[in-house]
Length: 303
Image 1 (cartoon, rainbow, N blue to C red):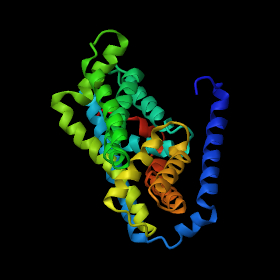
Image 2 (cartoon, helix red, strand yellow):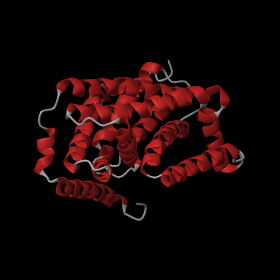
Image 3 (cartoon, rainbow, N blue to C red):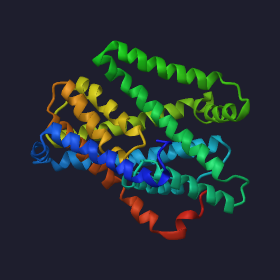
Image 4 (spheres, rainbow, N blue to C red):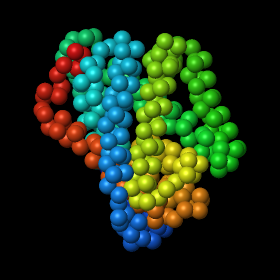
């Protein structure tokens, strides 16, 4: 969307979200969505909400690990607080990356005030590496489901992922791009840290799918393991496109398309996806308290 003037980006993104949700409403039968959402079972919903807490804590640990590998310091408590703030902002602001920009600004500013010799560039590098590790994990998790649709699709996805990792591993550390990739290798793919990064990213990606599945169960939709693999990870992967707040519209449209292709009702797909978005929003609410804590939230990043 680089050709769109900056002052029009927000209206365009909100319009895209509105159009996608309207299409979902039309395809899923509108009021049928509300019918599908009736009779929510609280236990499954509470379990889904409970999973969002360790999900956020694991994400903050991954961020902290990346910072450490780059030669910086980040206190665990501060990492968790800033991650909660980030996911809340990502939930409510268009584009899905405002929270990460805030993470960069707050962490970079704290390092500059602490006179560590690092600042916004270092903070941006750490956040980009951390988010990239997460997207790689979610893409890898989507491959088994793609294989259940068509083996060729899985081979294509696996080939693209393998090619990306090969480029990352073989690019010489020369020039700005080479140095940036070398930093990613050292922070995420280097042998001393690869196992920890893999376990963290796989656990986080799996927790997203688990929350989605628990939302489905709360609506009485009992997906088999095979069907869940086919439709849940790819639907969540659609949220990676930084177009709408927290993937709203994109996630619902992808869900409806995948569920229909699997022979499942579109209204269930839309209802589960909407409920998933609401659970994630509720799970991010601690970020409101932390965000409004004032300047105290900018101190002691490196304890």
